[in-house]
Length: 407
Image 1 (cartoon, one colour):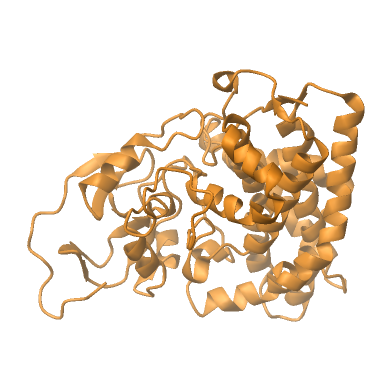
Image 2 (spheres, helix red, strand yellow):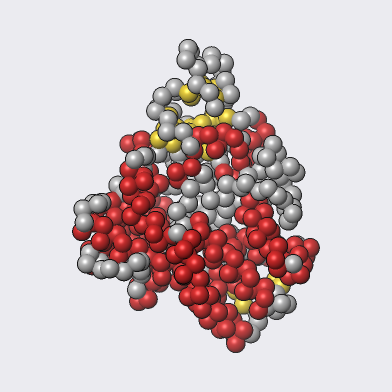
């Protein structure tokens, strides 16, 4: 990325493209995004909610550059009604997603200890124990079974609840709130009601943990508030997205397992070469369209010239990690699942300061789920035809709603 010291490019900007939310079945790549990728490195888009239009970067190099460039601010988004996918937008102070430096590091430091490689390694035996219990129940009841209901949903909920410090009695209610928040089907009123419920519960929990010496996230936040390192408002805003983030593992793993169950050559590779599973999982993480449309915008703090397009101070800018992961300049034959693809510098967990806080934890859960299910259920296969699998609708995170299997 370069910035001209004179005037910005005078070429006509690309037309503004409407980008409706599409209810796509399976792991189909969004056709609108595919068109935008073909049309150029920078596009202009309008999403269903919010106001105005925004730039969209789809090339791998541009996505990495923008997400590492302090001239593009997340914090500024909180002062504007930017065009967006979500029907409701009310960011809270303390949310890492909307923090710029140096606040981002100050906030992230408080909870970082719960998401380190060492912390995740300590959690592994407990996570495996929880997963084994779910698979024991699956085996005991016998086939057929819905893998989402029996394993893919309850396991990440349990793991995230363990890390966050959610009491067992509150887990179902917390999950009901987070599920409603990431859905686009209920409109602004339903999302607001769920957010009020979740954030009210988080506020009470953080207050109750003020004197705790525990290493769960709510204890770390309560202690940090007591020491004056962050405000209570920041603690609550910090916790919410971390709690909601557990939903992504369910649906990402659902997509991965669907691909394994519908592509015999991939399943054979995973079963007969367990030592190479990590490479395949990285390729599946690169390939799956884990979300609808795009995530959160940034605002240009000054004029920037990118590929001859004049991005003006105040313009909203989106990046697409899904598009970056299909950039042919970085990933030859990008639409093909290549289990031997190396190197594989995918951006499935984001990039730059806003790289996913829970990436190590998410990867642990993904590995445990795939390893345990394939090893304990060697005959695992779909119980319905592939085109009969029901997929989630009107949601920001894509995945199968149900995954009927037998073994």
